[in-house]
Image (cartoon, rainbow over all chains, first blue to last red; front, top):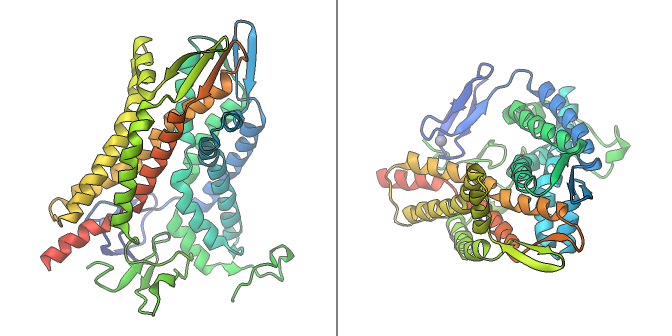
Length: 217
Length: 208
Ligand SMILES: [Zn+2]
């Protein structure tokens, strides 16, 4: 099925044909990336997201890095830096780190799970479209891979004066970065939107939990 | 043919093509698919982007000159580090590749981003219609690399968490780090508020 779109970078009207798997569609005028179809997109994204949630729980609940110098040792969690920044009257900066490295990735995984899991079975939960729109909008603010580079740099700096030992959280954090990257590559937003349009709406009488929503059928 | 000329709006979030609303208040017209407010172009793109770019230029100075960390040894502040002194530290200790990463991510990238946006805004101001493709690519570059400037903020966060040995040695975050975080966020908002479609609009207006 062909669909008409306008390039998001130059507003050129285009007919986007049904693409073969893995083919990248680019705007002929400005070269903007338009779409790449993915083999088994929904299932693969859901798999990565579930793995990511497990790694996330490990990453926030176990020791992250330990440092030993002159007989004193110190163990930190992933969240320690944020707490310390708050104690040093740098709450704003702590909030930036909290949002970009912990809340935004968590929100993206939870929202994908909420949208895609029912969608796989042809259903659409209340607010699924709005949640998916927020996922797309907040994507640039999830910066775990930049945090990883920061960890590597500070380890180089600290190994000169002390012994730094990575904890279980450290390894799951590295895994999480790759899993998150894989989930965002395997996701095909065009497919999600077209499936959302066709999916059955789940009404409040089916799910008493969502009684607060008022859906028009 | 562009969406604007055909009277069509492409939803900014989900890229659904919607007919241009000619209702009394088009500001409140929402995308039927994802609920995003429909706009032909980003609202006040040029003034908003100018304001954010100017604010970032002003923040650039304290972000690079005010200390981002203060190291205390045996209860006494022993040294304060700015971004540049961090780069020099890594150069002196032989890790030139780390020095290069920090220098590019923290010093070059924010400045380059601000100069590119200033150039693009100036080109729109004078209605230049040359090299639209290259200018669009420059804009995409600013979107792509901006996030990596955050790396020094994260280094500070990790250092203050790890180096806390009471009276023996301590690292505290300095106000420069807050300026720097604000700088990165403002430049990200600046890039987000810029609408590359305006580059192509000017070109078409000239051809018409
Ligand atoms: Zn285009």
